[in-house]
Length: 350
Image (tube, rainbow, N blue to C red):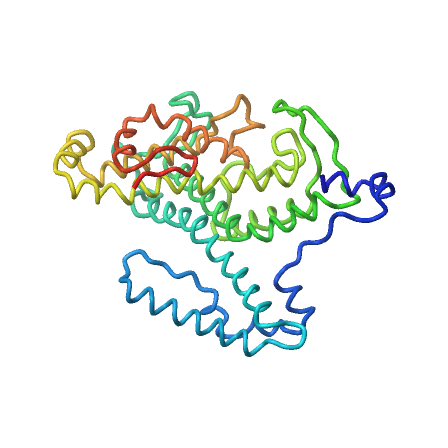
């Protein structure tokens, strides 16, 4: 509705603009003379995400009190005639939302990167756990030796991590791209129904910068660095955002299973015996799951050609979703179920 409302013909009929720029915390505070809040040394304490894993209730309650005290002190310090304490608290809650988002959406990527480095070495392929893939085998459409596949999987996870870090900015840019009066869309049948195909210059430039940061950190790049935007794969900026919000839906269930597996085995000797008989040990079971994921969630599969899948930036997500769709056929599927897995749609039974 908002995309249509910015069309010149519609605006002429309406006589006013329906769309307006998103209000950011920075713009809100700067307009009210309270931008100093963002540079205050106590702001990190006031918006910190308090983790509960492995900590006592007393420690958690103590951190909550410290956070509340810092938040209230900042609200009193920076309030003025144009910005009330309630306004400032709302801004801090908004900043805290980003930290919460990162915890649930970026942390799974960090954990998978940790598992990759803990269980595998880039220059050494362990017998039975090589990450090498060959086009035509196991559904793979790419051919990589162990070292190249290790690097390919790692750079993809690093890319997803950077996207998660910048997601709020990318979302803001998506809004600007979609509601620009100069950026008109065209209706086109993309093979997935009629879509609004529209360029996304702001998001495209931001993604180029993200890829550049990853390339600098890794010292190179494996595969294609093409980002699909404004074509039949990713018609517009909203579809781009939707694709990358799927990353935690893929990784979170896997991380939860890997974390839960040692606990489940420790509670039930029958389960431990089954795991040892099938995989050798709990660690070997974890490694089997990870090896299969790092091989075939990043093997170029999931589409009929290299434009739609392959090694391009968006094709990596396509391959990962393709791996998820085949989870029931994996030798470790029963392990997933015992650890509480239900689906990749956000469901998990603890």
